[in-house]
Length: 160
Figure 1: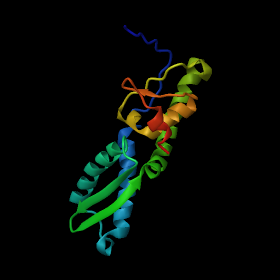
Figure 2 (figure 1 turned 45 degrees about the horizontal axis):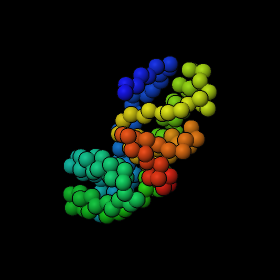
Figure 3 (figure 1 turned 180 degrees about the vertical axis):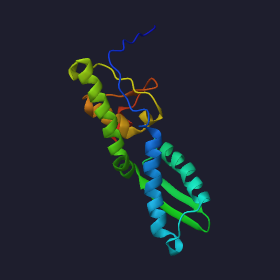
Figure 4 (figure 1 turned 135 degrees about the vertical axis):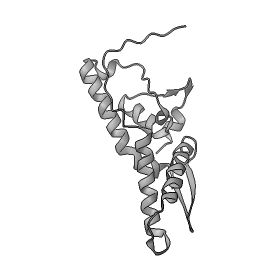
C-alpha cells in the first residue's frame, strides 16, 4: 500500500534539532567540569573534543535508559556523574518548545484546525527521544505515538 502526502504548509528552522541538544548537554557538562576540575582549570582543546564526542552518546542513551551514568575522562581529571531522564527532559524542554512553536505556525498558516489532525509524521533522530514523543502526544492530545512502525506510548508516557 502506498501512502501519499499533500504538503499544505511548511515551516522550519534548519538549525534547530539534535546539534542544539548536543550543545545544551555540552554546556551542562562543561559547567560541571569548571566547578569540579582541580584548581578550576580551563578545558583544553582535547577536553572539548572529548566532551563533544561524549554528549552524542549520552543523548542517544536516553532513548531507552531512565538514567545514564556519566564518566568523562579529561586530561588529568575524570568527571563522574549521572543524569536522569527527567533531568535530560528538563534540559531540552526549551528546544522542544521552540520546535512546537514552529508546528503551531504551520497549522495557523495551513488553516487546519488541530482537531482535524489524525496523524503526525516527525523525522530526524531527535524524534526518538521519549520526551519529544510526549510533547507531540500532549500537543495534539494523541493516545499513542508511532515511530518506525512501533507504537511507543508507554515509553513516551514514562519519559518524565
